[in-house]
Length: 211
Image (cartoon, rainbow, N blue to C red; front, side, top):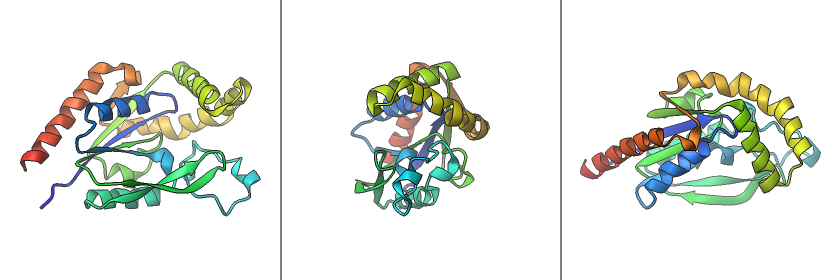
């Protein structure tokens, strides 16, 4: 009987470095039996809404995510079945027609700002990480990312941070820290924490190869 895959959750605020932690772990094991599943891909389909209404989407609120689909997909992967991971179109503010075929692996890294907020998701995780980074670093990183990658103006990024991102972080994201098994300060710069996780995952992969 095939061994149940191990699910590692990596949470943290926008700009915390959780994606850097996830990628650092994944890159170390690239080519092995490991996959990444990003919560950002599971924003709700909004095709039924007028475009003007979609522009008001609060992407930092728990209700923005289609966790039902994410949980269904996790159950499929845990049952060694492949999935069609959705793709989100940020220009149209709705789900794309494209999908990404994902095959099951021994280790699943689930990454996202609010993966620890939903108890159903938490119950599927074997290890829960929270990347904890000071607010000033998070806003600077988000500012640089949104200007460079999304063509945003400084004013619009700051306004969004003050009116949406910061209050959502304080209300929904920061409180989920209490559910974490391990808290990683400073994200991708914390090489000791990453090395510890790499060692743990290596052990899991070796055990799965033996059993």
